[in-house]
Image (cartoon, rainbow, N blue to C red; front, side):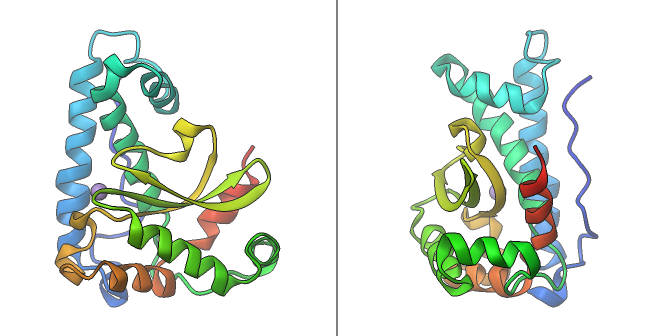
Length: 200
Ligand code: MN3
């Protein structure tokens, strides 16, 4: 069974009132993400990785430099699915309940969290990702280049933002800081974060 591209968790145009056009998803989900799935399937066809869970393929290929192509595509399949789930219409702002307490405990305040996350997202040079992770019971911010992700580094991902230009060029042109601000204020799916935090 080849790896499948998971469906987008919202309609292509669902985030238009919140700063991200359908056209962004037509390209980013419909072309870029799909290409990673297609490439991965070509690269693992007939090998023992073809039938392993995606998470395992990521961890195995990260440790083996001869499998860099497999790692890049497998991780980008996973990262993008994780990114779509990190977004929701009318999301963003500070979380409530237990999550609010966790953010306060580990960052000092929501504003400090937002500042640290924005800083990581803005300073990741070129392509990559900003993440909120659970690092052994403590929430922290991480940034990774290209396809790299917390999973490869043994950390649990809770939330992500793709900061490669194709993620924001249609909506924000070259203004990455405006894309980051819009994400934090209008799009962050805190339900997804809470779900990830609760998962074993
Ligand atoms: Mn991307």
